[in-house]
Each structure stands twice: as C-alpha cells, then as structure tokens.
Image (cartoon, rainbow, N blue to C red; front, side):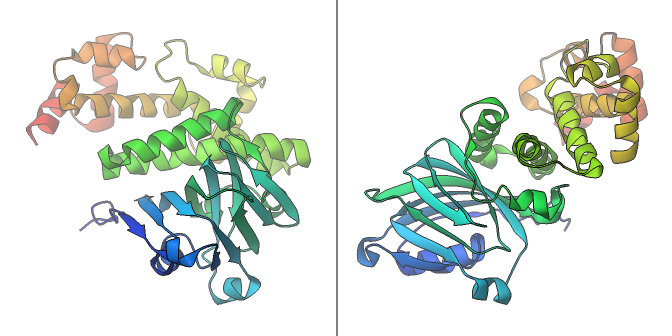
Length: 324
C-alpha cells in the first residue's frame, strides 16, 4: 500500500477531562493540563492529517495548558503550530511574549519552547482550529520564527484574512478531499503560512538574503497558483506585481525551484486541467473549455502540451479517469 493510500483518516470524538489529556497528548503534543471544573469538563476534537501535516478543530471548556521544559526534554516533535481562535479569548505566553488572542486572530507556537495557554477570566469555553507541521518545512531561520512566537497575528485583513478563510475552508471540506488533493494542498498551505509570517518578520527584524529569497519564492509561487486562470499571467506580469525584474524572478525560480517560471505555470495549469478532466461533475464540459479556463487559449496548444505532460491526449485521459 502506498503512503498516500495508507494516510491516517483522522478522528472525531467528544471527551471528558481525562480522555482529553490522553488524546491531545498524542494528537497535538504532551502538555500539563489544569481544568477549571474537571467533573464538568467537556471537549471535542476533529483531527485531520494530510501529507505530513495536521489540521485540528477543537472545542473545550476552561482549562490551562502548559508545555514545560521537562516535557520538552522528554519528547519534542519539533513542530510549529498556527492556532486560529474561533470563539472565546485566550491568553498565550511563549518566548517572553504574552498576548490575549481574540476570535479571528491567530498565534504561532513552537513545540521546542515552553508555553502556557489559558482562557481569559470569565470565558467558560473556547474553540479553535490548529495547523501543525514539522518546523523544517518552513524555510525561515529559527531566530526569525522565535520573534513571532505568541505574537498576535490578525486574521481580519490582508494575507492573514486569506489564511484564516483557507484554514476554515480546509477544515470544512477535508472529508471531501482525496489523498492526492491533500498532497497538493500541503504546498499551498505552507505558501500561505509563509506569506503571512513574512509580513511580520519584515517588520520586526531583517532577514538573511537566503531567507528573503525563500520567502519571495513562496510568495511568487502562491501568487501564480492563485492566478492560474488569468490569461495574461506571465513572467512580466508576475515581476511587475512583486516589483522585481524578470531577470531576478527567473533567478529565484532557478535557485529555489530548479525550474523556469514558464514551466512552473504550465505544469500547475496542466495539473488543474487534469483534475477537472477527471471530475465526474465536469464530464459535460467541453475539453477546450477546460483548457481555456486554465490559460490555454488554443485547443491545439492545450492538447499538445497535455500529451507531452501526461503521455495521452486530454480526451484519452478523461475517458480513462471517468471509466476508473
């Protein structure tokens, strides 16, 4: 069985205090918990793994959660966690930062550093969505990450709002995504997290040239993926949107992605076409319309590019995909 086929399907359970401590120790990470009212405590968690990352929806009664130095020494999965507060206000302390997170805001945690989180006085319960992923997947030096631990990351405007909407949408549609969909969503998720954090890292401290190049590549990649349906998408338009030269744009892609901008655009457009051709809901849509939707103005150009990419024509691919 392949890694994609054997990916865990997650869990959805409602728990008491004891079960919550046991379940979150495995699903989110070991922590020392104190419950305001252990007998009345109730919580719910949905765990949604995808491609080495994990999204969790949590609803819980009042409690205090601490990740202590002793717990870190015993076990450190070296994860970064981005928590989006949905209801309730939560105090968070890590790396000498101490903030109160309100619904709609996000906060970054590092599993390798002690932290404490608790609902604000007067709050009976709260709910949140948490994204967690291996720290090494984020192309940012640790000192830059450390500055943002337990800092308020607004989710009401700009890239923060886009990330908030994306995480909510992913949690709602997770069950309808195939393992292949989840694999593709991994890069999109990392791109959006990186784009959001980049704003605050730029404001707080200068990044190394290598880190800036990493972040720029993530931002450029995300911009391209979000605008694949724009027929005018090109190296020139991408460079203008990011206030850089086409020459520097090409160099970033060669150094970070080992490809050219044009090839990157074509491959992602062909992937979108491949997905649509295999979608039973679009079986009645003309092949040329699918190609046109993703930037291939001429049917002959689309057919030739798709055959070179997949080894068969769009029609042959659609027939095989829908027959299977």
